[in-house]
Image (tube, rainbow, N blue to C red; front, side, top):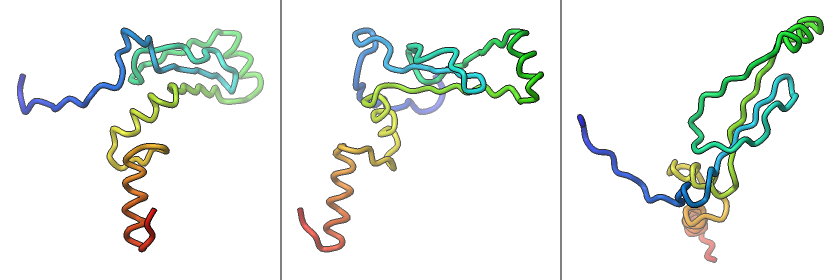
Amino acid sequence: MSGPQRNSIRATYDSRETGPRYHVTARINDETILFQYPINDPFISQAVTVTWMGLLRNLLRFRPLRVTVLVGGGAEIVADVLELDDNQLVPDSTRRDAFGSHINEAIGRHQ
């Protein structure tokens, strides 16, 4: 291993026990072709296959083929991922409460 070792953060769940906590949804021209398919992590490579009929139908309508891939998860796991950034203020979190308390102190209000 080269370079300094990375400090690991405390895990908030074990996917071997909970199962996949992320999901992917894929759409072509606003038509859902894959809905909340469970995945193990949010770092994915998604391939979308368009049939010749689908491509021809799009060409005849003179529309561009728009592919949308959405990666999501349950509210708790999304909050966990967002809180990896110290700048995020996730609702109902200790970080947000501390920030709010600091702001209230700064303007002279106490809770």
